[in-house]
Image 1 (tube, rainbow, N blue to C red):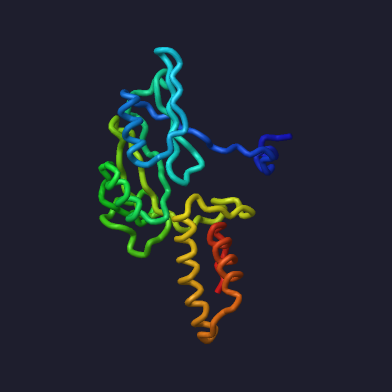
Image 2: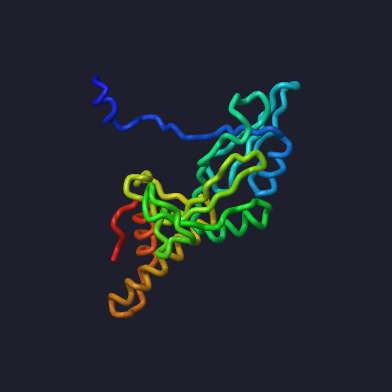
Length: 212
């Protein structure tokens, strides 16, 4: 089998990204910071005086972070561009600030590589609005608002939501779209709205054409 043929085959084994290691200088200080953000503490395993691993998972995230002693030779604070995808960037920013993080003002970009513009994207387009914050060592996190995935960015056969907030936001978008749907169909109540909602939410999640 050639490399090209191998690359075009659909993978048969899931490779789920699980953990990213971030370098810190003071493990207990980092533990206090991420605990204060409300992230779930999954583990704190010291082994003697030279090794310790701490694991935290952000709310609703399938992946976690590790930090500790003896994990990496990278300089403390050298991690950057750690993305946290949120469905409502204003709400996420406000909660992080309330929990003690110093979060930048929200900004948006008109496209990849474009200069930042102050404020949230006026049209609330997915992938356009951002804010940043750092942990005590300077490891940099980037909030990105995503409400609709581009085609091919998700498994079309799986529809899931990382949190109650994400599901609620998806329901609100479906409700707004369904209201427009009812207007187009003469303003009559649609008794099959649950099916319409489900079709809309699955299509939105998979980046497929949305129902009219």
